[in-house]
Image 1 (spheres, one colour):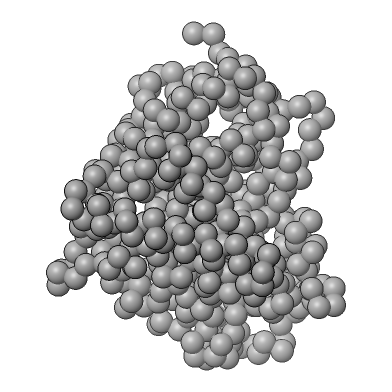
Image 2 (cartoon, rainbow, N blue to C red):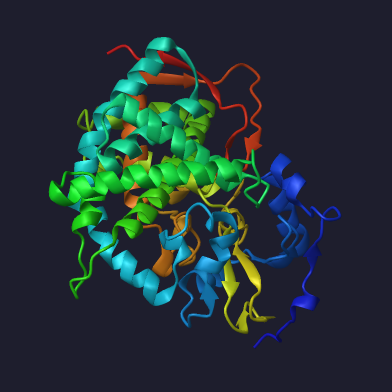
Length: 441
């Protein structure tokens, strides 16, 4: 058995005075944590955003953190500094029995039949928007994908179709998202947080009107599913709880998927042989994928997984200890902030061959590098807090790639050099200028 260590014995990446590694990470969100891992190993302390969390990079430790078998960790207290003011009441802001109860009530909204209903609504809109991009020939992809996924969230979560209502909702949500990312943690006049709180109040009023209508006349949208959800004891969600969950799900339903879709397009534009492979596969499948046929797009699935490996939607998952506990032979006192470093897990040299390289076939037989360790590949987490919407996110990515590969070739500008922005998820800082050429049919 390995001897235990105290936190004082851990190596530490202190960074600059006061700000620690924050500014360095904002400038170089991949290189900064990867270099810290190479220098300090699988467990180290890391100064960032005025905290000194303990960072864990090995799959053994990350599995222990995410599954939390003894209930030693708080997810809510880990995420509270980031989401507490504007995303209150979401699943990540709930722990243990409270979390299990709410997750149980929400599970039906992500059943296969419900997902197919959302996909039926979303796919025609995805196809129409991609066709418009191809017709233009050139596009800055990030804002286009972001707008598309915000609209899809409005339609699938709320059943909102009217353009003026969608515009109102999107403006409110964009203000909330900017408030989440704001550096000033006090809602002073003129700050992003203050504007986000006002937008949340406006959105809450709108949603409560929508909920009242959906309780009387349910539709196919997710809000209707939440309005009618009951647990084994007959409990239902209150209007306020539905508001909290819808706002949080809207964040989850568009933002992380936005980054993944754009980074997949970037890698495909760099690797044209993979465009050819995905196009051949897509042309052998139906024009429009459903929940079942998406699984037949095997090579597209490898590309999606490799994108999620290299650019995970959440690069570092926070937790906070509720009591003294030991992880990876490190004794952690109560109230210690820690991070499960998914970005480092997905580039861990003990698990992945040439981990910095885009290589979708690492997920294929016979290699299946993601099976070298039970917790080697965790883009959506695992355990009680595994992402409830991960199947929906992957279906959206499949639908976008399927139509894009069937109808277009992607090219980057000559001599393009990627610069990443880290927040709210990894994405090109310049939005990814892209050239699209229609494929003759």
